[in-house]
Length: 283
Image 1 (cartoon, rainbow, N blue to C red):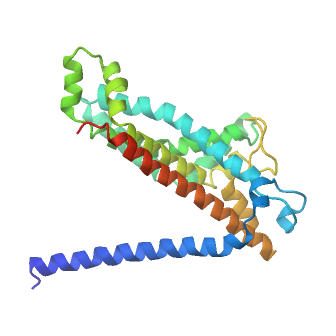
Image 2 (image 1 turned 30 degrees about the horizontal axis):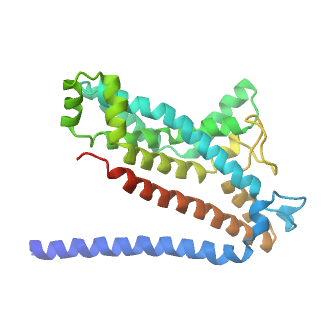
Image 3 (image 1 turned 180 degrees about the horizontal axis):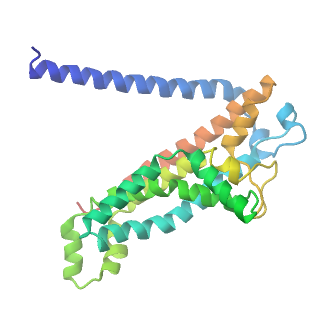
């Protein structure tokens, strides 16, 4: 028989081994990307768009994909934020007493969170075909916004649950309406968590390829309009890896380095902003 002390040590060992295994996999992937990508990374690649024959090993860069990814991710995040925040406040303030509906809505968001991004892209493409629309920056933004909407809603929802009940009741006691309590008390109290949720959603949007391949298209140019096709880093990596030339394949890893650095900067910014705003949080 295993006593409680031995059982605790066993589970602690399993947790340590699991953590070490995940860290090993993460470090292996990052090392492989940087090892193969850094030698091929150059200032020209970051500051120039693809020129004729770029995907056959000739001159140019991936500036179009870098800017395109930023346009898509920023636009999608803004759209999703404008929709998510009112929904989350409505659920936690106005529907607080209707727990059954709120629970059903949360279950629905969890289900939507688990749907593969390729499904969002396929559905969006079918809608575009029905209306005769072409691939564009706007279509990519809307598709990504719908895809990250469940992520942002559920993240913000869990954050709003941490607001002390006494703080909300004190606001009502002072004569504040539900609308004033929502935006002047609760939002201010949860700014660190909302910021983290926004950056988390942004990170998922900028790294997705499956949903934008059908809706945003691809182009070697920087889009000058919301109704023009746009490139993205994930698709640029995919196309370069599919090339038969080794130099172009190495450039794909260089593009992956750029994408990794962008996501790393987002993660660091998230932590710094959380620490900055968390100082004013009332526990």
